[in-house]
Length: 148
Image (cartoon, rainbow, N blue to C red; front, side, top):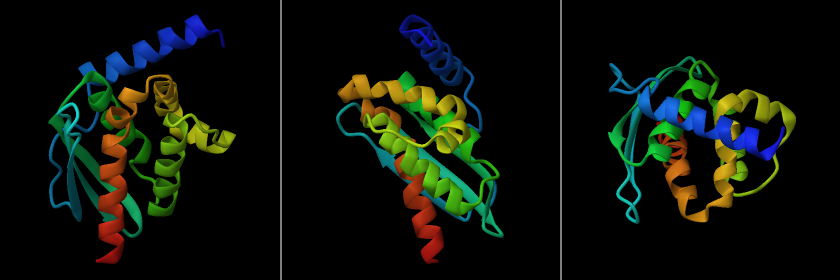
C-alpha cells in the first residue's frame, strides 16, 4: 500500500473512532477498572472490564483527551471484546511493539485489525503515549483481575 493511501486510511480510522467511539461509557458490574492519565498532555482514560470464564465479556472506557487517545481506546475495546485474557494480553503487547516501531507477526496484525494502522504513530514519538494510554490501562486492569 502506498504511503499516501496509508496516511489517508490512518486519518479515516482515527477520525471515525474519535468522533464515533465504540464502547465508550461505564459498563455494569465490572470485574476491574483502571484509570490512567498522561501528565504531559492531560489525556485521561478509565477502562472498565468484565472478565467471565477467562474471556472479556464486556469492556468500556470513559475519559477525555486528544483525538489519538480517544480513537485508540475505541479501537482497543473493539479488538479485545470477546477475546480470552491470554490473547488480549498478547495483543496489548503486540500493539505496544507496533507503536514503538517494532515488528509484529502477521497473525497479531490481523487480529489487531484497524488498530494496527495506529502503529504509524511510531513516526511521531510525542504521540506514542497518547496511543498507548488505554492499552496500558487495560494491561494493568487485566493484571489486577488475574491476581484477584
